[in-house]
Length: 447
Image (tube, rainbow, N blue to C red; front, side):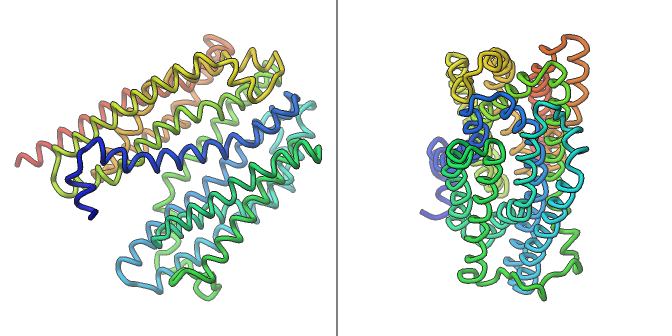
């Protein structure tokens, strides 16, 4: 099958399925990876340890902000260099991403270890959760260089055309973490510290695999210090291209800190519950995100080919798929809401808060897919800025003020409703923005 047959001729339902299914699987693997630490710490039955993992989650999110900036930005620069047959620039880009990741990772480790007390205080750790949070933070800190580089390297390897090898590297880290979590947390009785040790070892193993790939399999990727440079616009192009994703992740980290600070006033049980809900609800969100992201090449190809009829067909069908998947997943979660929380922990107080929070977070479940499809449509027609604005609004600039406003009006119930209210505002805004862009494109096409 050639590219044109899949992208431009195949029946839309079949083409969407062919593109979306692998993307959905990849997204759900990410969900499982993110759930692992909270799930296995929850099996200790100690809500304070679950709360500590929730409180320290922004650290990992912030590491991913830098990993995505170097990885996605490096991928864009590397792809252009390979397309231009500029092997020197390809080597420089891969070397820059490697050493920039390691340097930032080492800085992360130093800052976390030296300033651990004030950092954990800002995150909302109190006398009951401090020791657990400290154990997790210490062991995740020395893993920072490996966590950041292994995630960035997966983008670079994929940009060279080796998507299978990129997936293998990611899977090594995920599987290792899932296997090691119960060993360190329960068998060796390390609790939250064990979760961090498992995460660090998983990323060290993934880094080892990418190291082997760079040295033995890759034709152009380089680890040589002599290829490292910040000149020739390498630094500005890599960081500039990856900056929107980094801002998105950084704001997500900030909003998580704010949410935990608002909740810890009501005790550690709501903090433990929101950590579980945040991870559990990822299934509904990432299922639809996977569908939307999977069809982006279809949208881009047909826009580039000037086939707006097929573009609109793909858009419409994908939105229907997201709506069906969103309604089905949300209904399933609503029916089994208590059982889902009890999968993670059996503490009755945490379960009580968790059930209410899960229902609140699920309110936007049926429609959140529309936001992702509209954003991908914008990106596919070269309008990345409004898509980035929507992401930034949803993860921080709109969410954070709303959390404070809703808490002032409705207390704890207002805090837990913040994300769904933000989601609905972002979905409505995305329809207005995309409709405006689409009308402009159709007007230009008519002339």
